[in-house]
Amino acid sequence: MGTTPTFRTDRIRIVAWDDPGGDPAAGHAPRSRYVERFWLGVLGPATTLFLRRAATELDAAPGGWWMDVESTARSLGLVATSRHAPFARALGRACTFGHAKALDPSMIAVRRRVRELTTNQLARLPEPLQREHQRVTGATATTDTVVIDAQRAADLARTLLELGEPIEEVDAQLARWQIDHRTRQQAVYDAYQTLAA
Image 1 (tube, rainbow, N blue to C red):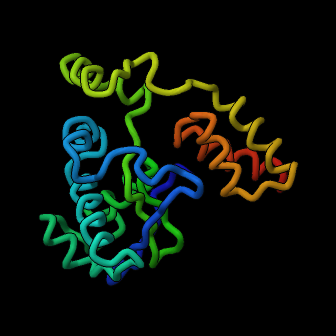
Image 2: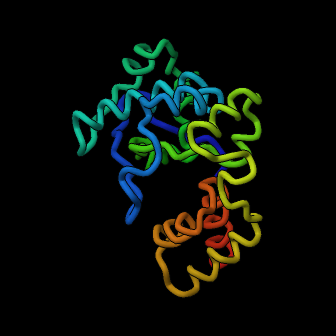
């Protein structure tokens, strides 16, 4: 976790990543004003454009689609010729922020809905955007998500794994407890590594 995934440079299969048991209407569409106003400065324009493109393609082909990496990168004004190319970094950021996940080097699952900013992400926005976010959502930098320390989240994840829950269900349960994606991801990883040792 925390490292940029390596992707193929010719074609990548893009599939939908829907949270099991989650509300399909929760969050915001990648093409929404919310994403443009609040996520753009966090994700950057290349990642935001990729998420929008993926949403459009998944609307047309719900079962997934084969993305020609070079063509897609060029259509977004980016280069895709190496692991450190701007397009590869955009895909990596989508994964880092929990909007996508690499299933293998030739397949990426992309969320159809974008969650609201976490408390920390909201606190980093300029004051005018924080006020606008509060007007739009009613959330402030102190009430946006449940803040839980990473060790406590890892303890909860370890307990669920010890009870025999599959990793996907552990992540889903932590999400139901309103633990933000990045903390959940690290907690599940740490718990799994602890039990595997």
